[in-house]
Length: 359
Image (cartoon, rainbow, N blue to C red; front, side, top):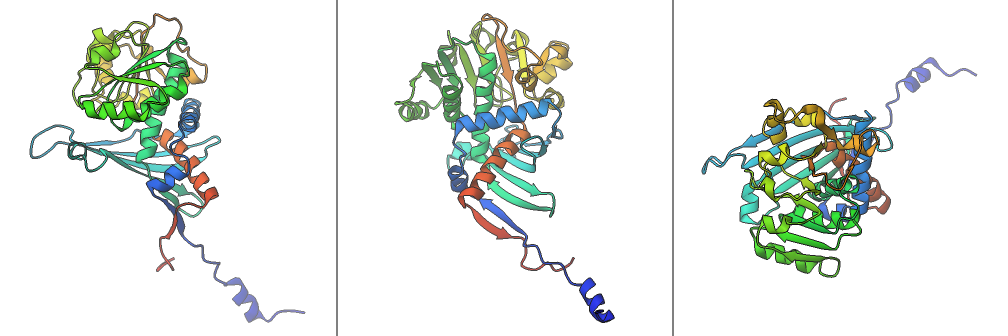
């Protein structure tokens, strides 16, 4: 039996079923529910992303950094905005984009976080987002997770004392990270210009580790096995003479250590030298261009994690891990959170349209 010709034509021209252009919107509360504050998992995300990057499985363009001065006061780099599009392959297999912004105005007023970030995860098949999430907590967790991952291969195995500079958001997550990565850690010395903020962290971690407030950077660093700096400073303030022999120093910003800190370290480890060397505001980049640091002595952390380059080789080495963050780390962590959110049923489904005007 044959169908009429008109029926065949109509069947061939049936409109495809409409795809619902939904994406999952995750608030900060949703991100927390999906595991954003699990530091052990954050460190796993970071380590995996570093290894994938070092093995050529990440497509990560150099991230543009927009810097703006305060028009009223003239203070330089008062506002920052950073764009980070990334594809992370391997077991992560996710493409996305992070938009990161900073305002020193927020920090001074105290009414908003200094950094406010958004991550978009992209659905390749349908060319729409499949998730958009608040990413300030992801940034805070992965930033300090980086220092913890570094500590596993760059700090001395007998590390017991850490000296931390900065008691803000990253100061809090730094304590979490070091406790997770260095089980033998016994004491943390904490300095911040705002003593009240430091004392708040002492209370917060009172039943987990001994945190003591000190009165200076020098006091925090003196004799410490691990030192970190995570501040909003736009000018160097840490003296080379304060960095202890045999220490692991996680330098979390671009303008904290004076030039001699970079020049006199025994080992300089970074997250991604190919990107950092394009940033003229990063001290190591300038010092390398001036011939004061040999470029071939700088090591990417991913090479160490893969076993291609050595980590710490003796207890006397002073190792500086200077990093400014990679979008691959954010996307790896965001992908885990997105999948967990779907599993838990948290978040809000939003649509780009009910019916597209044009196709």
